[in-house]
Length: 55
Image 1 (cartoon, helix red, strand yellow):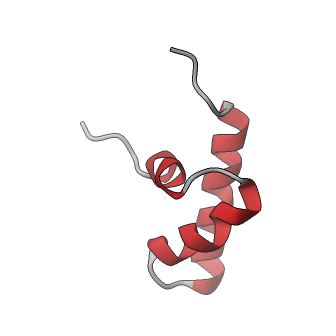
Image 2 (image 1 turned 120 degrees about the vertical axis):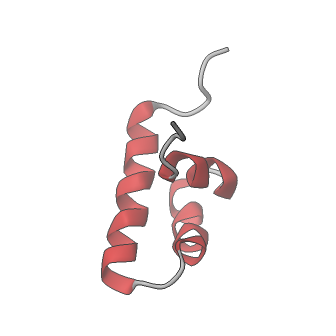
């Protein structure tokens, strides 16, 4: 099944969350809620993009 979002959009979402975390701090969940409306990707999808895979 093809991915719904491009790798570029996923990378952008991760960069935005990490940048907000570095500048604002606070819980990652708050950063996700702030970033999600800006990029138009669901919160759970963005959370999964920002979570490293488990070994």
